[in-house]
Image (cartoon, rainbow, N blue to C red; front, side, top):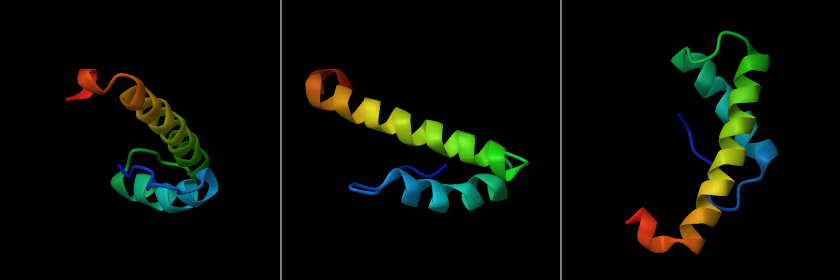
Length: 59
């Protein structure tokens, strides 16, 4: 599964992510893949913020 690159926009990430998710078989339809990729982008941002606030937790 791909992860967002630093400074990558959500639109760019989702465009890059969809074909990978479909090829891996994680999703069978492009709309399912898009939903997964949007969720991954949102989750990645939350994790990054948590890492900055609580760096000792993520060693």
